[in-house]
Image (cartoon, rainbow, N blue to C red; front, side):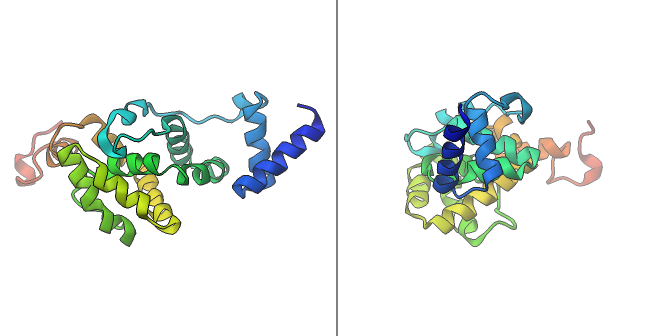
Length: 195
């Protein structure tokens, strides 16, 4: 791309996404095939999430979701700064990522008030296989609430907590947590199975 066109594209990207020059330049260069190999993150396989009921039948951008999760797991602020604003405009994708984490967890722990209030809908979506109520609530959230929900979900994805769910899509969450802990969490430690 000629230098003047590149600069215009970078400035346009900065204005559209509200990101710094360096982030916009990296995005434009990667989009044009320049520097793509210089900056990559290991990408988890998340395409199957589009088949889950969490987005209530609406299209999800699994490529964008995968890129954001990869950037969060790598702890890459420039990529997160470039990608998260785009993800925030994709409510079905946000609902899908958040339900995939909070739909099976027994509690939202230290999550925001928004996430704690929304989690029962995610759990219902997980139990019933119908994400309509969870998605509708996300669709009706303010931009600030969606941002809080996504931040909480991405924290879990970055920490790897969502991976337990990915392995146990049809299992009881308590059984998945028991297995992760190496035995039955309801029994005394001395009777748990050793790994």
